[in-house]
Image (tube, rainbow, N blue to C red; front, side, top):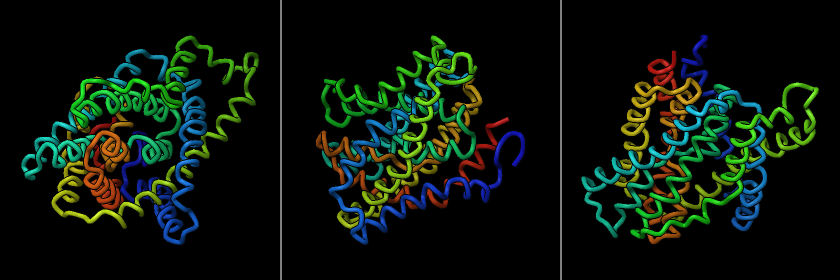
Length: 325
């Protein structure tokens, strides 16, 4: 480790391993029938609508990085653009794999085009760089959500209508609220100078709830992945092709953008981790809702997640050495 961050893959492995261990625990609990499928929805409902918004606000309040409008704009813009670029790469490569529209091409492109940006990425960013980078990642994720529920849905469904109601959810509202509070400097009432620290206990309660979100979400993720493995018959062409794109080709594009664009240090740190992430779970949901091929999404999610356990530390280490000062 040096002043610029962690460069040794071994140190990074120690930082990222807890997230993967919790995912594996979820698979074990599902296999042992301790964590049943009927538990998934109510637990994730509480995580998504209560715990995660509390985490978002607890990290955003008091963040100096988010007082810079340029940082906020770049974070949202980069987050929105990732699916556009990744999806285009996936679409072109899917054609080479002889996939066609109506037969999995769109699901393949969407699945490789968006990386895990939430419950796996955030704990890793927290471990490596702390609250400042996490606050920027949270705003970046708003851009990702916007792209998923606008361009992503239009692409998957071949429909020009956008399900705007899907964007009105707990995490999105909490990000917007956090940006308003930080921009108006009202967040000083929640953190900082004791003379104006009126809502300290409320902030502490939000931190407690927020910190509970990720262990639960990662365990449920592991259980869901175990279900996918049992149900979906894998295709090497889809699983390996998607994983190569998600874990090798697209990361190089993300890292090149982080290197060349005029971004803040925190956003560069975020993009280093985002480059290393496996496929997100969101395409599986979108494929189910909008007539895609959930089986293709499931294969790419499972394969890229398993392979990323080995590639992720090296991608992060390479990105740190190449990009960060």
